[in-house]
Image (cartoon, rainbow, N blue to C red; front, side):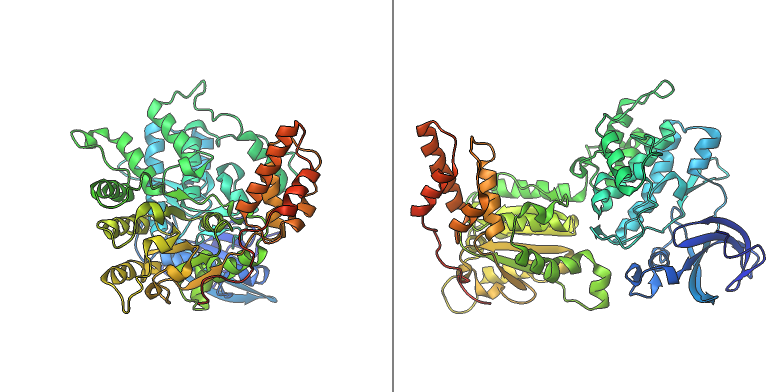
Length: 586
């Protein structure tokens, strides 16, 4: 299909000079402005773009993001000039005009002149990371860093200046439902989690790692032939299979220094937990190796500010002699497995997705509909009903950084040092935001005093929690005894939402039985019957049932049978024989 415009045609007030390429929803041109200067112009066919893939259903995301990224100057990101719209035939079009960058694309440069040496490849990658650092500071992800999206220009002093010129896949953090077309993403430059719909700053880090690898080796990491793949599913499976082999870090023509091997291994880790924590951390490590003399005679730098805060936290905990010691606090990154590890409970999971998760994963929708920010939520229910699992799965579903604390191990706010320790945790969480801070059994941390009025400790805790959403923190708490939590904190702006976690439902009980029996000698088991007979059981009740059946079977020297399990269930009663919402109704 031929391009929309020919040389000499007008796009708004611009004159077409040449056609560049045609994409899934847009065409690119070079155009002359009224000042006779050359510019890039991208024309979008609005009629072919779903309203859900437009900002507020009206404007192309790429135009919105390009304008937002041009509020400050960054030489490593393409710069916005103008935009507009017009109608041609029976279709509507929008256009975006940006600065024109002379030079050649990185992939063309490698194809023509060969690969770069380690020093030049590092210099180029540092510039790309500089652009990404700026982009991430605006809470935006690029999602498509590849050699064909980087324009390389050689400056007069011989330095190389790369510029990210394509913003077609820029987005906010995305979990599961990308608001951009994914069919044209370069398979080998995509982080593994993006094939599950998860796009984060660390997936951008992976793409930059793949870019650095390409500059040195002339091909993408784990690159293999995809010509026989008929669809995206086949491509994904072929890429996944290729990545099961070790990463090749040497060839006949390339001998990497050990430090570069370690950097590439970390940037290209298939598990995002082991990658650089941010574009900034990747940048600093490369810079350290490019100019080691700048780091001589200095103390070893802390990897990032959050690590420094955590070091302070550890010291504070050790010095708080009268407060219980927290042996380890692990800051984790949601992998995206999320609610998949929670069997059943469909109503609760849908409620959490609708009332909490949706707004956090779709900030543009939250802004459009003026959805209130959620500061904190409470999950309550009887012991053994799976609140802790739901809390962790919730954090994984969001895909944000998170930490899970057990209040009983931490102490309560009326003990010396505990509030100071909490302050350190909130400080570290805000640095790693967006962040989910989980506190298990919060009634131990902030117990109700049973006296009229509020305490100074309650006020101090409220000051920590109040407005933490503005710092990118969501507090997720659990409680077996919600009536024992200080009611002063159960208010909008502190703990805004309360969710009842009931005993495991039918599907959840089947899953619990299946997990406990999976590694034991068993006859054929009817899990549906077991789930029916264990109505109102909590997970602990099911665990005891299986253990008792296992002891009986072991004593008889036979596999665990359906009859043995049913016999145990016949005389076993649920620990909590009620389906009412215990404690209180908010």
